[in-house]
Image 1 (cartoon, one colour):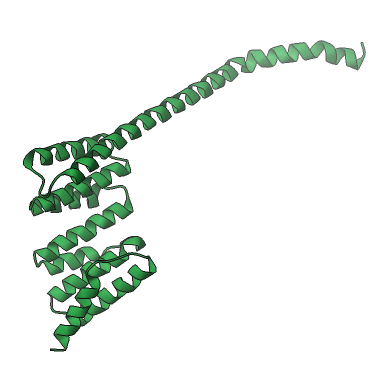
Image 2 (image 1 turned 90 degrees about the vertical axis):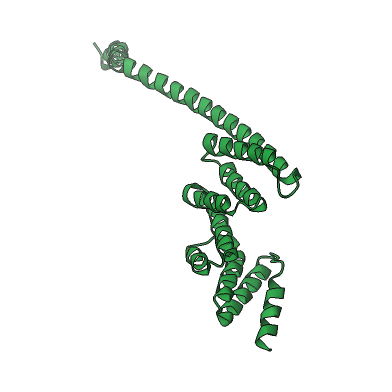
Length: 221
């Protein structure tokens, strides 16, 4: 028998043998791949639904917080707190949770509930996932410490790393704390840096130029 005929006779047996040996494994792999694809699509759909729900809750929160008179009455404050709780518990890994806590802190400040506002900002610093939002919480908490003349606490908060986009605000609050401690030269330096960086970033810091002018007037007395 020629070689060609031998190959012809053996090829079907080889293929059958290979399938017998590896067929079940191949089927298993195919099934696993299909399950992975289906699972991934279902996960994407779930994630999409979660983001839509979070977005709707956040939109309701913003509308409620912005449409109410300041200070917000007790009923609306409770509605806001309920929305924040829903967002932060059900969508903790989304940016909406970070922003919701910042709104809750602002509402608390407007209501004169400073301790609650400070606690909310600390929670954002500890549990937030967005660096910018956590930096904003740190600055706002330092600002509240300044309002209570707790300047050392404010400066301690501002010693941490802050995103570049928040540097003008951080420097302004730092200057406020230094001014409160009587370090006018250092306060001027911080405020001037804040003004310069705000200009570079096309950011407006309302009232900062007036602080510098008032400081100059004090020094010239």
